[in-house]
Each structure stands twice: as C-alpha cells, then as structure tokens.
Amino acid sequence: MSDSYLREFTAEVVAVDAGRIILSRTAFYPGGGGQPPDRGLLAVENGLTLNVIGVGKTEYGDVYHEVQGGLLNVGERVKGMIDWGLRYAHMRHHTALHIVSGVAFKLFGAKISGSQIYADKARIDLDIKGFDKSKLKVLEDESNRIVAERRSVSVRFIRRDQAFANPSLYRLGDESHIPAGEILRIIEIDGFDAQLDGGTHVANTSEVGKIVFAKYENKGAGNKRIEIVLEKEN
Image 1 (cartoon, rainbow, N blue to C red):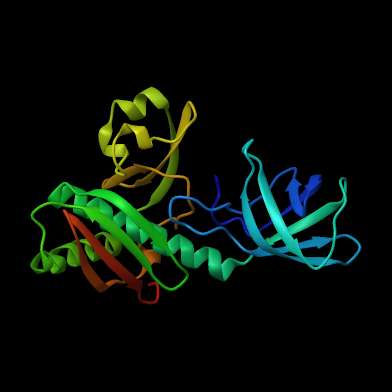
Image 2 (image 1 turned 90 degrees about the horizontal axis):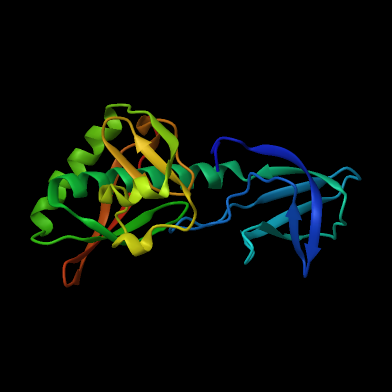
C-alpha cells in the first residue's frame, strides 16, 4: 500500500474463484497487523454495483475481494471505490497506536504484544515492566505532544538485512516476527519513530486528533492494555 489516500481506481477482473474476485490492481487494504480490511464498492461498466464485504489475501499473496450483489466475469472492467469514512478512521487510529507505542518504547522500553483497530477506538497491549497506572498520564500527554507537533508520516522501504540490524524497527516480539520478503515497508514519523508496518496511515500527526486513554487494564506478567479513542481531528 503506497498511497493510503487513494479512494478510487480502475482495474480488470483477472480471476474469479468461489465468489472471490482478483483484480489487476487494487487500492483495497486486505487487513493485517490489527487493522481490519477495507470495505467499499465495485462498479461495473454495465451499471451494476457490487458491495465489497470482505478483502483478504490468497495463499499466493494475491488480494481477493468478496462481493455481494451480483457476479463478475474475467475481463470485465470495474471501478473500485473505498469506503473512505471507514478507511480514514482506521488510518487515524493506526497512526495513533504508532505514536503511543513509540512514546512507550522511548520512555519505558515497551514492546508490543498485540493491538486491534476499530472504526471508533483502538487498543494496544504493551509488554512493559515497572509500569503502573500513575504513569498513564505521562504516556498520554507525551503522545498528544507528538500529535500537536504536526510531524509528517511517510512510507519508506528497506532491505531485510537492514531490518535485522535495527531491532527498534520491530516492536512485536523478536526478529522471528519480521514479515517475509526481502524488501520491507517502514512507517516513519519524522524525527520521532520508525516501525515495520504494512497498514494505512495519515500523512501528518495532526490528523490524528487528541488521543484519549479510555480504558487501562493490567493483564499480568508485564502486559498492559490501553484502549484509546480519538477526538475530532484538528
């Protein structure tokens, strides 16, 4: 995913298998890393419009689209339209989690043990020692400082060996969690944080809006769960 802001695209149907549509190109995010897949529409030249109700990846790495409302044939041209409200909500929450995890890593050496993104909230599980509820305010305030500094968020790519040489890039456990492939994708918040990631993000931290810690749970053995909600973007 090179352009998180791409809302529409045209493509050709290249395969249909058990109701799953594979296109020559797509802007639909198939889900992963705690971020749900996109939803949206596929409009056919004959006027038919299909709801995209599921997106994922085949065992060969191709993105497939599960649709409702009709059938498509190989060779047909379609216009894909992303549900932008849902996509943008996921983008804001995903970048917010990178900010929170980045601050937690810098201040407390925290690793990530899990995360989940929704349209209206998100949660992150941090593997963090010596942390208690009294430090939540520090983590929340520092996270919002990064938001307010209007830092740019960008995508870059590195070789696999470069990722192994920089453990701070992979926060989800050890190097066994580094994704497959020789070229890996990095999400970088200018002057603050860089992490391996395949999801969609906003272009500037100011788009996140105020991060509010809505819930905190001590899950035991150093595992702390924080649920966040976002106030309207600036």
